[in-house]
Image (cartoon, rainbow, N blue to C red; front, side, top):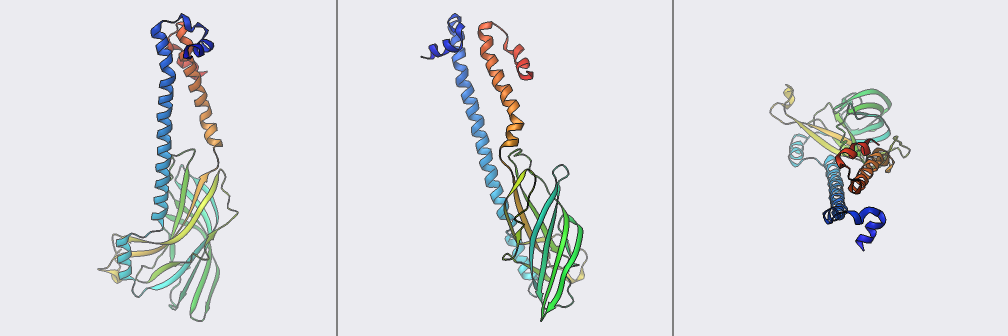
Amino acid sequence: MIEKLFLRIFPHYHTLTDQEKRSIRRRPLTFCLVAGALLLYFCVSLFNNTQKDTRKWQETFTIPTKVLADMSYVSTNATKVTCGTYVDNLYDIDMANGTFCVSFLTWFRWEGDDIMDMADHFRIYQGSILNKSLVKNYKKGNMHYQLLRAKVRVAHNFWTKGFPLDKHQLSFYIEPYYTAMRVVLVPDKENSNVNLDLHISGYGVTKAGMGAQAYEYRNTRGDMEIEGLKNISSELVTAVQIKRDGFGLYVKCFIGMFGCLIWALMVLYINIYHKVDPLSMLPGALFG
């Protein structure tokens, strides 16, 4: 049955020696084994990457146990400030330089502490504020409320190993200049969200979230108020996960390589009964 199939594909198959026949029959099996091994490797890699992304997403909104315990100790008398964000747009995603820009609304609401001014006392961790404007600022009873619109540029280490099936978790951290002794941010999850019309060329938004985070610095910056204590800042993190749309780019990137590979494998069979050296024909097949 196998020999009849080979006779249809290769009319000169009957002229080959037994050793050449065995060689030509082994090649499809070898190709299937190699292709299967590569497919298994890629599937395992994609699965591991998916698991890694899931763990990273969970860790983004989880404060390390030790930092949480230290913050609870130093923030006994801190003012609880409710903070939320509304992501309006993501733009200027620059993978080469490792940055992206985001425009958003953020608000602060707290009780008492008339001296505190959150609008002018926060920064973006590992980022820079390009533009900031105060939209609302009022006091109702003993409650203070401030609403701001801001545009910021954030440093981000893009994971490009998965290209062109890549996805990225873009996050930014709002950090008060006040330490956790003075201010602890409480996430306003109920009112925080992302613009439903958010569009990024070539990518789609898969999920978004926000939550509380904290960072413990290794020094006190010479601040006498926290001398002998942990220098911890309460933070609010907002994250948006984007994923490349479809398999179109994947096909465009690799269709040429797949075509050359198939042509090169065909050459391995053609040269068997034409008595041509395979190594001399492969470069021509690849460039062809």
